[in-house]
Image 1 (tube, rainbow over the protein chains, first blue to last red):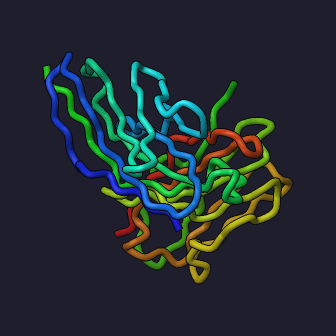
Image 2 (cartoon, each protein chain N blue to C red):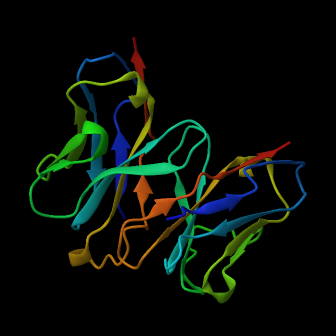
Length: 119
Length: 112
């Protein structure tokens, strides 16, 4: 079974500063990795996903993440944050197709990281 | 394109009562999921449907939770009888087979 650990429960930063939200996963087989964002009282929105190929993936709203197989990590970064980035961020994993995965929706989520951007 | 619709958005019930949540997926999406998100935790998959058949319900507490997807479109999730620990947000999501999933805004349940 897969598992996800988000290393920081809360990350406070000032506006226009860079930010990194850390995510480590555990799996003995190939996986697909995702980052979702959840704004207050809303559902989850996909930021980006890693399926295969380039280990640096770019997503919406200026976010990017790097897949590191040797360190089993998938950290999310943004070079300059805005007040509007304040939200909760979830890292998630699912079985890759090579491991028999058939759906991107059967996700195992981390505990979430609350990003608070201060003016 | 309309998103995943869920209702009601908010519900407060007493323990041992019953509650039902409704989900209408994005048109053409054959796969439908129900997730439970307890405050302070990430979402946990309860059940996955492919058209009107159940693909995975291994984490659904079947003694009190039930779900159906008649005609392979809308779905309902029912809890009977509710317990205090069922207080959570119930998220519905849908996807075309083997593709990115889209979440609804969730149904917030408080059991008192």
